[in-house]
Length: 224
Image 1 (cartoon, rainbow, N blue to C red):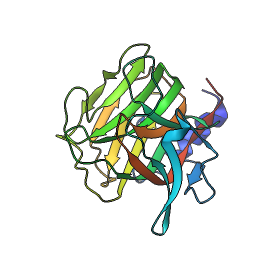
Image 2: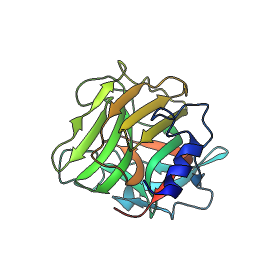
Image 3: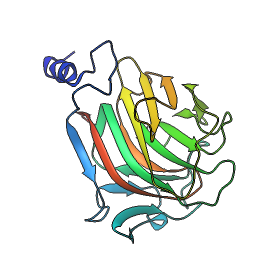
């Protein structure tokens, strides 16, 4: 490992037993986004499906079309907006999200990471009820999405309130942990080393949602 990166990981706590703990010093801040200046740093798969709007005192990035015009090459989410020109290996991603779709079994939002291209990436599906295609961590690796989560819950209890979501990723050992409101105990876990770096994104499979207060901390790397 390059000395500078090793030092950075050591000081951030990422080499402590190969895991990040809630008590570890924070990783360097890469992005802090509240959309007050628009969404120029974001790249949606369908620009007509997203807009910046006011929601009371908040300015939010709203994905308001249930089914966008984007057609993925393999069975995977239709609504994605990627953070431009930022590629991370180890990272901690925090966001506030409001599900705006009517309630049903697969009501969802998604977060994306390790994104290489439309056929190669990871995503977290936070769905109302769990099955093999919902409320899991998935990989898309040149074929339809495949569940890789080793732990999940019976479902993500969406309502009409804002919620805090977090993804913690350690690329070297492949660990992935997902948190929902409770930042101490993960609701999902997985372990996979296929994509060690990539872009970060937000969206949904085929529903709608509003996003705010996105913070990305991590180890910035070159484009894969």
